[in-house]
Image (cartoon, helix red, strand yellow):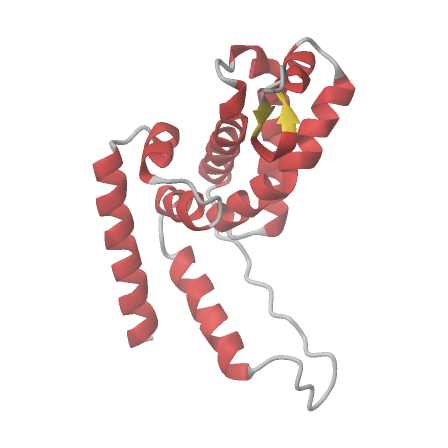
Length: 183
């Protein structure tokens, strides 16, 4: 027998979404608990700065709560929240017009073998290559490779066509591979 309550992404019930839209702070807290970390990861890829990513997510939650009543399909909660987070991250980058500071981790001790230096170099090269991309390009990559969105979902968020998303992603991946190979 089918359940009367439809299940929204990450186990959030449609009634929880409706309750949050009606102003229930506890319902909103359940939604935040289910989606906050994913939104932070997406914003970090776009911003390249942990503090700025947190600021973007913090700015996204009031927007989401205020507009939750406009969400037509509670099953689309996760993509809808990710879109708000992406927009807030891009807006913060535009407002601040700054380049993020790249933090260099200090090793635990001399001769620490906790991380392979070649692996660290590859990660550093990837971070630098990502920082060279525009926030919109980083958003495309984050939505595809961090959030796992398909081209149609990304197209809705970024206001592009699905075929445009696929071609831009292909060009971005080719560009990154080339930079990492040549770097």
